[in-house]
Amino acid sequence: MNNEFISAIDDLVKEKGISREVLFEAIESALVSAYKKNYGTSQNVRVSIDSDTGNVDVLMRKDVVEEAEDEFTEISLEEALEIDPRYQVGDVVEYQVTPKDFGRIAAQTAKQVVVQRIREAERGMVFDNYIDRQGDLITGVVQRISNNTIFVNMGNTEGILVAGERAYGERYRVNDRIKAYIMDVRKSAKGPQIFLSRTHPGFVERLFELEVPEIEDGTVEIKSIAREAGSRTKIAVYTEDENVDPVGACVGTGGSRVKNIVDELFGEKIDITTWDEDPKVLIKNVLSPAKVEEVIADMEEKSAVVVVPDYQLSLAIGKEGQNVRLAAKLCGWKIDIKSHTQYSEMDYDETDDDIEYLDDTDGVEYIEYADDAEYADDEEYADGIEYAEEAEYDEADASEEDDETEYTDDMEHEDDADHADDIEYQDEEEETETDEAVESDKPEEVIENDDENNEDRGDDIED
Image 1: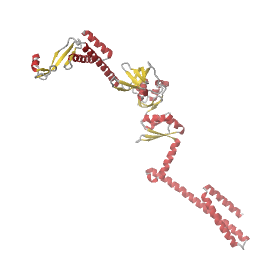
Image 2 (image 1 turned 30 degrees about the horizontal axis):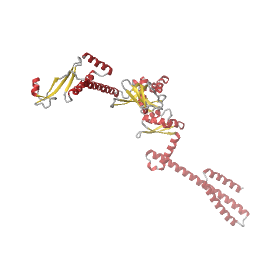
Image 3 (image 1 turned 45 degrees about the horizontal axis):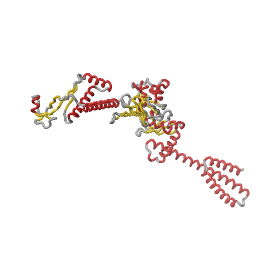
Image 4 (image 1 turned 45 degrees about the vertical axis):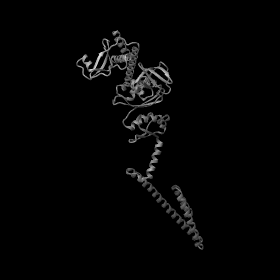
């Protein structure tokens, strides 16, 4: 029987993957429980099993005291000295009390304890195994589907893939093979629970490690991943080897490597860009396929204004802002997209504000805007001089016309000279005031035209 017992232990070790020590401890605990069930719960016993021969010994344990009060747990010093003269107060005396038969109830109790201990050992092994594999990629078979929750057979345990951890449009049936990412491992009363995911960014990273040898051996490093499962993924890669193109290594010959990943993700789009330590270059890269004209970065706030051509604005923002949202998540910066026209208008408004509040500026900016103001004053001053010169020129023409008219009137009407002078003097004042009012309201080109008309009018009078 002992040989059969040892053989059964070896079979359990191979089947369950549990060590012999754990099995022997489980059987010893089961026999202790069975003994207490058969002979009373107050019995202080210990079971010892020889792992080589399979012999089982049940030992009673009693504490040595001066006078025993509990015969099941204590023994007097006098009785202990009869067994061995070396015993002292405080020692523990063990002697064999192995029963011939435990009985049916005790045997059933032992069986239940052994099964329970083996099950607990299995759960502990599974938990210890998968807690270390958290973040790894696993392949399993769809075992059953309940309320949109998929239970994946992973060999020695089940994985749970809830609906929220699957991309939109993914459909599976029982017995379909599936790849998933181990997102979390938890303990529960029913054993360890392994939660899987196919929407986690780490799932894409593990797929690239599976398909790209340069990533697996560390030549190419994945710096950051931003993903909206089922729609689009952006990934930034980097390498210190100048002879290796990180983007080309991930794409593969003819796109073979990335195509396998896209097929696994049911057609999800993947953008692969080069990582750069310079934030401006990085932001320019992550906004691909849009072309960037300029990046204005604020290092303290970790925000940037990106200027793109007008026809590239919608492409840079993406559908419902997806492209810029993923780019911001990928580089960790707040990105504000502006078209070339919008940025020009914004820059113009800021310039006007700076000129208006000139006292608030300092340094070089104050000098620049001060020069602009002086230039404006010079233009106004020049306009004033030009206007004054034109006014003097008009007065000179008017005086010549007056002299010619007076001369003609003196020749023809000598008797009415005084009366003619008064009329002409009034007409000249009215005409001069009218010309000055019109000229003050007209632009420079109109004033010049009026000057030419005055000259023509003067020539007619002379004729």
